[in-house]
Length: 296
Ligand code: FE2
Image (cartoon, rainbow, N blue to C red; front, side, top):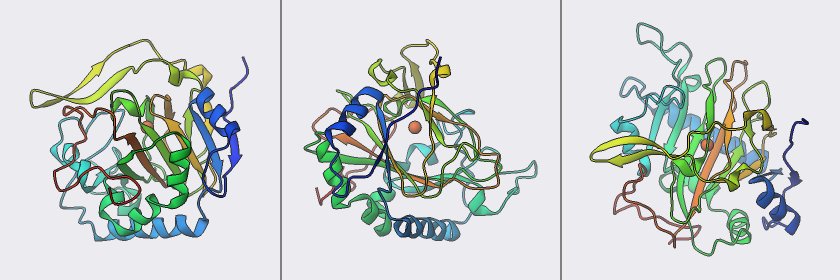
């Protein structure tokens, strides 16, 4: 069996996807657009994130995010972060005495989950005319920018992310979640780039994660058949690359055991016209309505 590979295109200047790109996106559930963002814009976002990290008091909170260990399940700091900017550590960030093993900027798993609404630099990066045109070309008339994350994948301790679908977390009826993953540094096989299983996005959702159930957050398994993980394709992504994927596209990434970080910024949109259940984990307060690329 040959290893599948993902289609990679030079990013369209105006953001609008061509028919070739749309066809590949429909077939594989994921496409790679090279040089979608200028390197200088990536640097600006990295600098902004590092400033936020610098201002964050690491003694104030010790919340760990790990897809493998599920440390965030029923953690209020995580559960309430849908309309905030919060800081989550890697599972391997602390030693037995509770001290950081590495410097602070190399200890964090991610920031989330409303960077795009609350921080002016992230807002500007997320709401460009080019990205709005891309989303329109995907057929979204009324998109809502639901979630953003700054992902560090730090050197040596960057955690593995097991195979999952993002609609598992950002569930809508009908399914409308699309993920936009911007490489702010080179993502390679060595530092834990994403891998996808192309074509499998057409299968149903396998889980609903962190569904609220009587005051608790639960993982609801809808289908426990294993993923065909022998059919994965790497999404190596040089800085400036945008990877777009459907909410049901299964993807994963290995640990980062290398000496290089793998910073990325992700943004997830949904169709505002669809139903967003009140028992999804990610909720926004009344002062933080779901907005599109403009003011509403
Ligand atoms: Fe994901």
